[in-house]
Length: 229
Ligand code: DX5
Ligand code: ZN
Image (cartoon, rainbow, N blue to C red):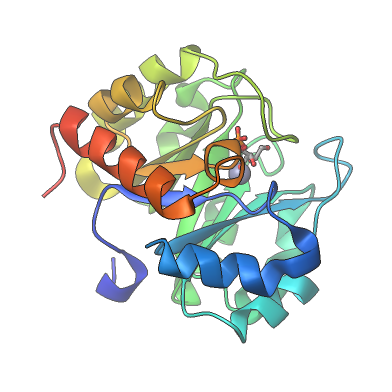
């Protein structure tokens, strides 16, 4: 895993779904000064999930305005048809859903060949056994702790044991990311279970001070995790 693709842990990844889309440039500047290292980009197609957000054209323009790592979460059907445009748009991490691409080996390899980190995401209803065979073939496992599609939902505790299972099976070779309902209340348990990347939408964008929100979450994660160095 190349160093510049990986900031130090814990990684708090603001989810660009609850931000002010009318002033994205300002939002990004605010997140940069608040200490964010990564932007979690929620791409939704209105088909794989019942919501529509933004795609590669928007991301390409954001790329011109920031050096932050782009963590693209593709909640789209047939990601193999579109992945090239996300690579070209300048995403560093690209995650696809196992429910959208049941045999993702080739696609993950393509993402890696492009110099990006390749991620696989699992919905709350999908078992870890569904991605077991991807050991050695993925750089990141994203455990959804809500049904994908919308921000502001309640954290589903089933995700905690899944994180433990992922860590046990994949070892330290993967980054584990958790997405949905993440904030000061839920971070202690998921950090302890082995999460490296904490995706947070509402917790950041519904506070007055992004810097405080990011710092507080990092501190809580650091206190409860056994594994950051
Ligand atoms: C949901 C998205 C999340 C979402 C998280 O499908 O993948 O990234 O924005 O939002 P919160 O943090 O509000 O649960
Ligand atoms: Zn997401």
